[in-house]
Length: 499
Image 1 (tube, rainbow, N blue to C red):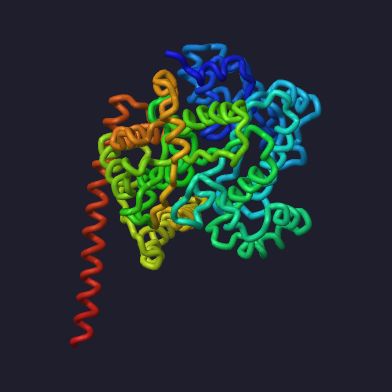
Image 2: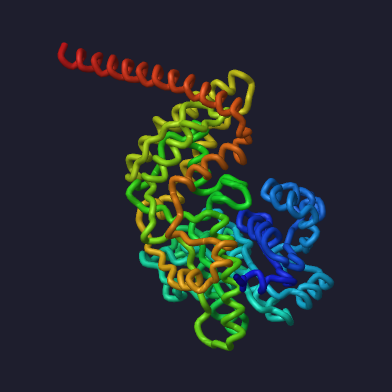
């Protein structure tokens, strides 16, 4: 059996932005483990006083590369960091490095982005929109370019209910050129003041600036072999390279982490809504295959609309937030962390007003009491501040956890059907056959191992279960005391009223 994808990537040179993020790391690992790619250049910027060389050495130690290095000890020698910054003029790439990229690169995957929903608009524009223009300008100089994959998001057009694999310029309140000009000419404070008018119906700066980034592709990249890849909510890997790998606390994973840690007890979510999540390894396989499809279309000389590939859960195989909650909770009862601070329970509220009231009792009041205890111990109070961030995160997610989106994936489905059996085996991403029970078990195993740093040993699991049982007893006692106190207070008021 032949593999078109393996043949395509053999001896290819790839340039990747966003290589330090979840998706970027798994793309690099998969290309190095499964293909004979010649070279992968990744854009890295100096950070917190650490130079690019130091960051790269730290990056190479990530657990995601352990399986790769066992089979190919020298694999990471094929990765070369390029010093730069997507937010800087010309991305701060030196002339020498720019010449290398222009001369050698055949495949570009632009995945660098700020995924913070509450990022100040000017900053979000710099990384999510202006950087796309800079990448397009660089790509136009690349002499051997065969495929340019721009990684967007399935929610770049979340102002509509049914999201098709097409551009939606009609949803943009102001053309991208004018928005970027305004950002250049006005200070950050003034840009924030006009942000509501610019965003229109968009719920946050992330989705808005990603939509503008797509407009840059539509208007300025027509002559390039380019396509857009729109993944839904990317969370832990399913099976590759390791089960449940995750590297940070963001969005849905942060919410699950907070519940299992015993700190989050109230969640703003509609349990009947479908969860458009995709495993990171499936997402990476789809992105890698997308580049091959883009190159194929370009070689065939087909001139038409820039192809868009959405990747989300299949309409015939969905899971709701209620199902996710139940599956994760049942797994966690058998594999609890040693580091929980209270019994992991939570209540799910779909009404923002009731949620606001409930947070005072479930989050802010306990947080206030804990902060008093911390002050008495001479430690810095932090819980109320932490709960404010949690509350902010819940409300940022609510536009996506309160209603269903119909994300059409026709192009991606056709891509899957066109792949050879060998490619389907190596680069599997068929969401219609995903076993959600097995997958969410992987998610919880990954959270325990990679976020809580608990080893998967019998001793560790036994200790976690002992701690879980202890907190269950304490939680039950506390609830009984609260009921008794509340009942006694109510009886006292009742007695006063009738005496």
